[in-house]
Length: 375
Image 1 (cartoon, one colour):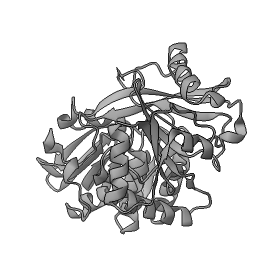
Image 2 (cartoon, rainbow, N blue to C red):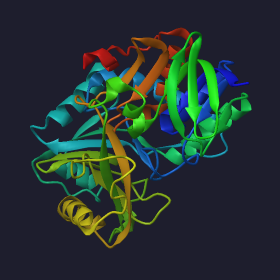
Image 3 (cartoon, one colour):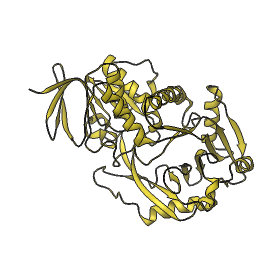
């Protein structure tokens, strides 16, 4: 006989692990399937740190979801033997005419977030690791910080286990198909059936949803850790997480944590569309030069020897907003995809939304901007 579940979750990374936990917490009989380890370093949810920020230069409409994500991260941390969210404050910075900085400030104003607008000089006086040009400004928001992604995934899976969920790692989903009373999922080990399916497959999502082909596009991303010449300026107590808009693109970074060096990267690093199963995973000297040149200009006290480099994957939509929806032809299938390099901070609330859609077909969260039919 084929094993039968209420819900199967395809992918147990950042979003999938949260979905499994929320589903199990509501009493659903849930199976999570992950082709790699839990956690693993092949997708989009690794690298020791992920920015959490409430001020949001992408779009103020994200702030209510961030507020709920914050509550859920705190709840998960209270139930876990380890810290998940570190508060450092957050900086959104750029030239005085930066749209990103203006939108970040607007997100604070519209949602009554505490913030300060700082000149470049004021920022450097307070946080001397920053050395931005004189005509730059910054929005400082004190509630920002960073999450530890691998630990967050472990915490969600452990919660799911406590509530009776089954999670199978190193089992690759080959295909799924609709059946009269739900879905059938075939793996390289077995086959399973369920009332509904959640697809949270990251960079592989378009392989399971035809409508995502050309809509959710995998991209190679690289980050580096450089050892600061002045390490006392780059600790979590003196160096907020940051996003910085420059003429060469938008960069982001973190204080020193867990590994030697302060970590940073460039959004859409070298704009390389890739096959997630066949791309250059080993960072190159060209990757290093791009990042080092940035650090030497904007964070010179941090631009010491290279300590580490890593690749990961972005899954980009054309508008860089998420896809959170059920499939119109198969309403028993829910999709969470296209998180475009800024999604992990939302994983806790995305899991809640995916569970809502899988069990109820709707959610109280406002996800109108994330529908699949906008493409």
